[in-house]
Image 1 (cartoon, rainbow, N blue to C red):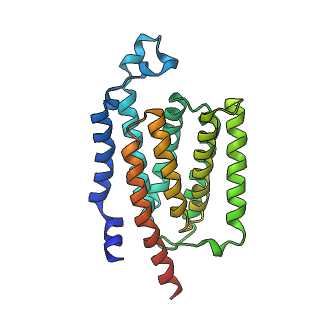
Image 2 (tube, helix red, strand yellow):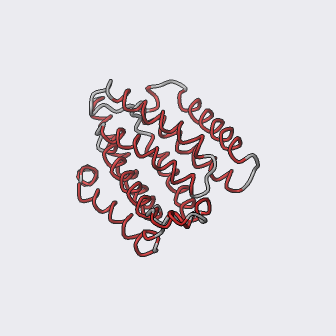
Image 3 (spheres, one colour):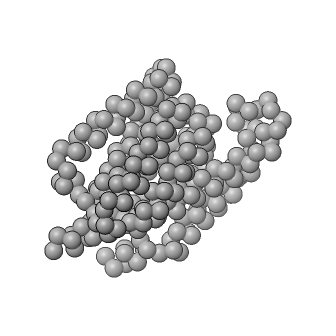
Length: 236
């Protein structure tokens, strides 16, 4: 547990996460992509001057830092994450996720709510599912229903990308809602979510995100026992 706590607080681990994103994007060539490679802007000459690859890398790096701060129970993780949600939504939409225009505003609101609710708790205070009766089934059902409905409005048909986008958003909404209440079990859901996102990033060709989600899986596996230990110490 001592090693996990040190790793969870490690600034070097933060830097490694950002380097993974940059190096993955660089060696895949993704970092040099411009906006003109996006079909929506392929006929606009000015689009070649917009460094879409670099913007994606910056967004991915901000996401890394946001997650790391949250893992350390630092409220600024939620603040940074809320800002980056808007940027990520634009990128995801341009990469073909039509549902992003409807789903990301929901994520933005949920992330913003976490800022307000975390302010009500002591910094090191962590909750578990049993502290909130019947909340997990309600969150799971609500998240999946909302995701399926919003993505159907966007895609208008049951395409493979519709199902993938619905699964990804639904799976992200669950731990995001748990994060609002600082529930330790969110990290277990993040592990599964990041596995799905890894597949999605490969499918979309967004290689800046491939290394990021591998890193996220490791980070979630570290954060969960640390949060759980914090909770156990409070109960002693």
